[in-house]
Length: 472
Image (cartoon, rainbow, N blue to C red; front, side, top):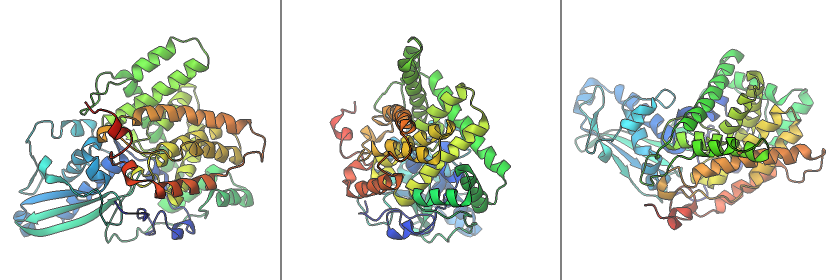
């Protein structure tokens, strides 16, 4: 694993480098809120996108080169190697090489891959078949520029016919060595910190949603109607994940044989009288449901990552049940997105870079901002709610037992959904100017803590609960 270097950002600088701080936020809603299969955006969505991208390269080869192809090998590095099987990386990258994209891949495809030992899967148009042996777990500690690196190679006999080095940089974002800078629009409103965002809003007389929406239009070239369509799809997918999780019992995939708990937690909550215990139980059940669907490798939304995809959906589902309108939910999602943007820009949302504080901690901060916005509190309350939630996840390690996104990940989603609500309650009860710690300061602390954190606590399953909890 690389040391204190961070992962490559969209603009080519390093996420933990000073050059990133001076540049404006470029992330878009469709990049932050990705729809695709769990259980990990870093380990599933990005590797699947890498496989799909490499298949496109293979298809561009001359016919003679295609006929000479003999095998494809995928080498995994960093936590992709350490916890790849538990996170579904092997199946995901093979699915991509077979032509499936994260946003459209049916859940049953990943369920069926490698279900039969020794089974091979031909790549359409090539005399090559893929098996479990096609994916190699390489070095956890390495010198590539990103912690989660994978290299895909097409061989013609012993000769390398085609090769590309990919980087999974967190939240499902994918880059590769030699990648040209993406030609895209420039944001209308420039900011890189919450303080700068607040200044833009105040000096231009805009709302937070106007800033996010106008930047989205400028960066993507999409009309508001298309942007709203994506936000609506995000809301529907989040709610569908909760609904599916609440209806499903049995064991989750993998060697841990972990039973699903969402339906049991919900039933217990519904047996309670109306009051705070009933509400907390329901909210926890909703988070369990979406997180369990993620753990099963089913369709979820990164918020900001797949491993933290139960927190915000629990709140969205609850408020949808309370008959909140779609415009209100969209506005609240944009408030949540603004927090995710700032953390990704100035620190990281990847467990492999900063531990679970960058995943579940950021999800809780986004959830707190979501609640403050839905209740129509001002920007000061929104950022204070996000800061409180993030502050109380600082230092959280990423130590998945057995490499599966199950223990402690699923329960953490439930706990952090409740912490998001608590952070919102605290922030909304404070008079203006009373809160002491700024969101920018908390993000800086998170980045520093992530840099200092030992690699065995960064999604590698080499320390913490991953070692102390028996796996069978």
